[in-house]
Image (cartoon, rainbow, N blue to C red):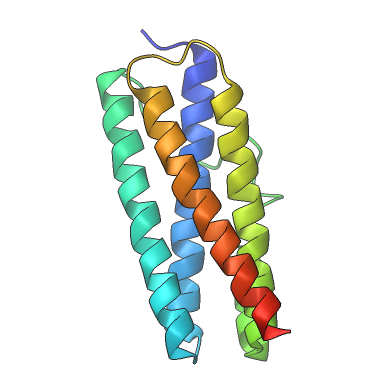
Length: 148
């Protein structure tokens, strides 16, 4: 049986992934640069896959997914300002917001990896996902830096 800490951790990661997927999906439909469209599509699909992996683990651990907001609340949503950035159509401002979202995701995964006694394959899955999130962060940061 999973602990309350494991449940809270998984719910936080799920919400972070949902925010990222929605942020990238929004950016994908509104951004004009074709290279960014491809990058955003890749990361929206990545986050969707990660969601499925974690939801499968939750099912195996008999943890029910929450339908409401994350543990940290809606005050700090990773991609909350993506629409505002998109209205300016500035490549740099869009990438700044994406990087801010990635900063949040990296921190959430780093916190999750510090958790003790994660059951089953969970630590391995979270570690693998962290590597993907970190690579996405670094790529977005590189694109942002190149746009300056």
